[in-house]
Image 1 (cartoon, rainbow, N blue to C red):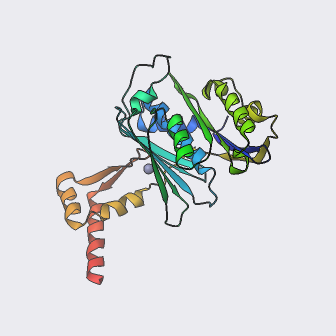
Image 2: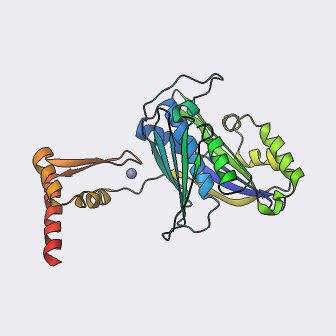
Image 3: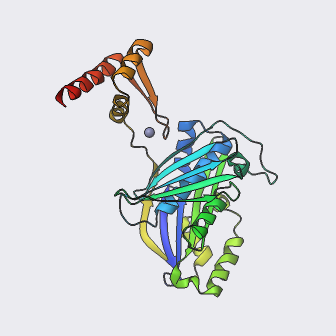
Amino acid sequence: MADQLIRATAADGGIRVVGVITTRLANEARERHQLSYVATAALGRTMSAGLLLVSSMKRAESRVNVRIKGDGPLGGILVDAGLDGTVRGYVDNPSVELPPSAIGKLDVGRAVGHDGYLYVVRDVGYGYPYSSTVELVSGEIGDDLTHYLVSSEQTPSVLILGVFVGADGVEASGGLLLQVLPKAAEDEELVQTLESRISTLSGFTPLLKANKTLPQIFDNLVGDMGLQILPKTQLVRFHCPCSYDRMLSALKMLGQDELQDMIEKDDGAEATCHFCAEVYQASSAELAKLIEDLRLEKAES
Ligand code: ZN
């Protein structure tokens, strides 16, 4: 199944349901960054979360950045997801591997760490990003983001995330977001029914591995509560807007002396994009041209 995001509502618009499948893009992140098993799970979960969080925004340029900084060996995680379905991200220490947890799962909580912070920045695209920070709950990412949605955005929500990594790569990855909107939040019976159904789920990846589609998963959860699946299936993908030209602009900002230094000491420059691990090389001739550009700009001003 292609990577995709599907939205739905139930209970006359009182419940918002969003599901995302990120198997391919999580595998692309794994290959690009040469991620360990546990790092693949951590980054895959965070990328799914970013896409689910941005899905409620309205303006086409909207983006969400999710940054997790725990005290575990993985270091920080940063994900940037857009309403256009693009997502990119990285972890500080991609090769960290840990033994499975007591219940035989990839130990994301220990890799991320239980102490630390989760930062979410919502940017609608015209310069006033809204940011919010909460303390980590478990480092398992799904719990931490659920806590963020409930405490910081005051929306009763459940976020279920899962990544299953086999010997050949990511076999299943995705997530599910259920939110009770203000018009239904007072309906305690509805909230309780929803909670009890969610508690019967044993995670998201078993459903994907059993070849359940997102509409089938929605149907199992809230099919009898007036489920309405929005017709548009949105494709999602790993994408980074970095380019050779952007790398040159970044180098130019270092200034003439630094560029001259790179020519003399390294006979060029090499830059790696944090987000997608793409490597860009600039020759001495290209650096000399940047110096020339800077000279001309200086002479003009
Ligand atoms: Zn990049």
